Length: 601
Image (cartoon, rainbow, N blue to C red; front, side):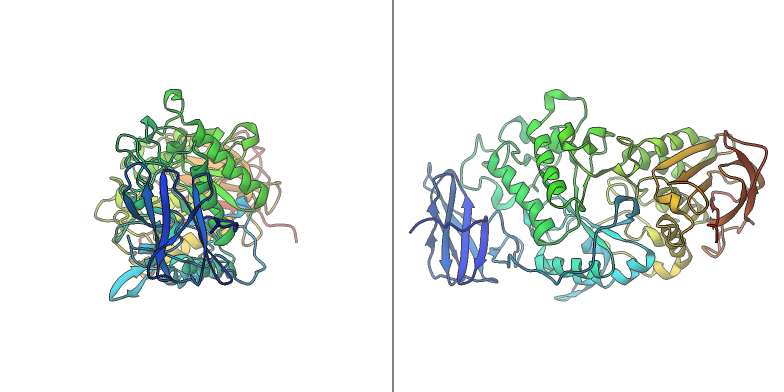
């Protein structure tokens, strides 16, 4: 029998059967066995390292695995499919999954980058339901919270990596099979249903992908067809000095065409067959450099750089409305330069300077130790003259673990509900939603979740009621950020002028605008000290009345807040802070104020 002439890798159903194709260049024979046969069925060499066959009678929902005979040793290796899209049990056989699942087209499009508000979540802990007698997160359980997220104002969800892993619980960044979706979460069909339900509510879904390494252990991917170099990983991995990562010797071989195709196919699967609206790439520094560093040419991996370029270039050419986000954390503007200009081609990147400067400013116990110039520098640090090439946050799964805790917990360990934790964490939130960039919050941040992030600790949803006012504060900030009421359009613009830096008083103020004018210009005033001011004078960009749109000291947000009286103001002569006007405001401790002007009627 000849090899299959049908396309695609892995197990691909057709009308009367399934095509199986696998890459095993050091095999002398390959066969497939599973629920569709009582023995095994040979695959046929395509004379390029690939083996394939059409198997009539095989169908979606059946289990299968390959039998790979190593050409050197004669050993017959039982292997699951590297392109497995689903499993029934961890470490079990591959499951034939539908390849053409679709849902009816919706009148949905991904929001522009300047309108995105991202909510990062972990399926295993975000929302849970009873599954076989256990509490376990799933896509179906998370879908039950979509109305909540929509009401909060979220229009994009970033899901922490959910590829099949070999343990019961995980953050998701130790995958064994990156095409599969963790079956206990709901598998590929559960993910597609979740995306459909999110789109129905105007919410984009961004998926974390892990292309910098596989887990340790890497399952059957390790020495897949028996070949290895001195006991290393075999055909899918580097077998030389480039194999080393902080998580094991499992860096994929970006220079091997078949592995590059494997990773490109994985990106296509998420974006084209599973309808995700973007990808967030884990630890891209370790794709481009063995040690994850800038300016370290001896450890650079040029093939990793060109791989990122190739995938991002294809996204821009075929689905330019979908976003590609790097977690590089090196302050490298080349990450978000276009591929045709020599950059890696990402749409945006997580911004390390911002999160570290802002977290430090709000967590530091003593007011005198807060540096307004460091905070201002973080506000101004953008890439390639585009503020939306950076994702801004104070909390994420990384910042809230790895020896650290959530911001309220860091402010007062063991007393995350304290006045100081509430005040300074919400000051940080106001900064995230008013600084130019793509704002992101981490699950539970909006109701003052405490402790540190653990993949075994579900969110405490009772805090949604305990801190209902804090939740409303986040909602109000998100609505202002998205120009919900058509009087803060400047918060979606590129422009920023940090016009007032008072390191003695710990007060900082900036002007945001898009096109400028009433309803567009926004002034944000931040007080980083436990000191209130009945009359604090500073610059304003336009004369006339300015309406107070937000006061984070309002006791409607928390009964612990002082409700320092803050009001609308009027700007006029004399000029202040190199702006044409000045005005006085009333400012509470650890407080953010947001002002804008009404549009003409």
